[in-house]
Length: 106
Image (cartoon, rainbow, N blue to C red; front, top):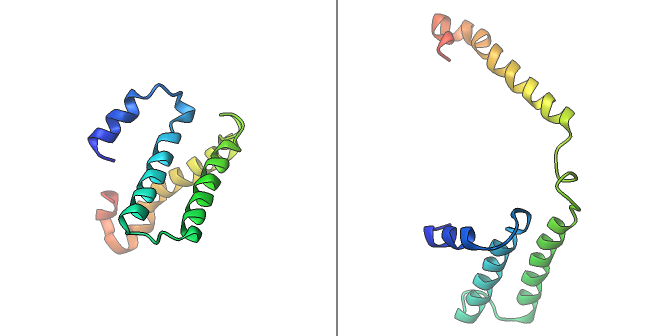
């Protein structure tokens, strides 16, 4: 994304949960432009496949009914945090055999 596209996104009057529409439209415009320029094949199969995939992306996003359904369960987040903390804590201990006293810096 370049600076111009970022500014366009910031100027849109959409709610935060509908900002996905702009990049999806940009992808559709770019693929249509590629077909018009001859970069992509201009047969009906290519056009219908691209349109079907774009609609699949849009439908997959819209299938999340609200913000609460799209969140991760709290237990999963806590479990991942526990794994990361234990990894960070035990890495220097595991590296002590190879690095010696330099494992504290790792």
